[in-house]
Length: 214
Image (cartoon, one colour):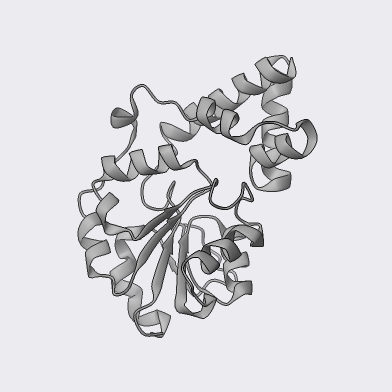
């Protein structure tokens, strides 16, 4: 693969969203379900998790079962008054991205306003050719194939020209099925057969490039 297109997930791939951001989003989604579906907190939280596990994103379940307006949901659940204090920036990330040959795209299940804000705080927003967010995927989140295909069509790419870098093994399964190279950001011991390379941290990416056969 000569000069591949690198397709990066955002949260828990380019930065660590677990300590501050994911808990905030989960609370916001639960509160949204409480208000708009008239549920108590326990029931709302259980439904949020159930839809996320069944469909890959809570939003997908809300659209399917409750005809929720996706833009309304995404806007209200991705508001951060202190985002700059919640994003954990790794200064070396920019140098790693700079060393990768080829184009770079972010593909996130998050809304565009949030993804762009995080990339700016990480100080790498200028390193990417595109930020392909959930709106651009027509609200079909990873690991559904539809969003991947829309991204490939938009950029006139063959899947075989791309390397997907992700923390979600389910999303990588779809990427590999389409023909992409796959890099799993994980500290899990076992590596599925559809993962080409596993790294503990995105900062290791340049060290393992030669294992991707391009």
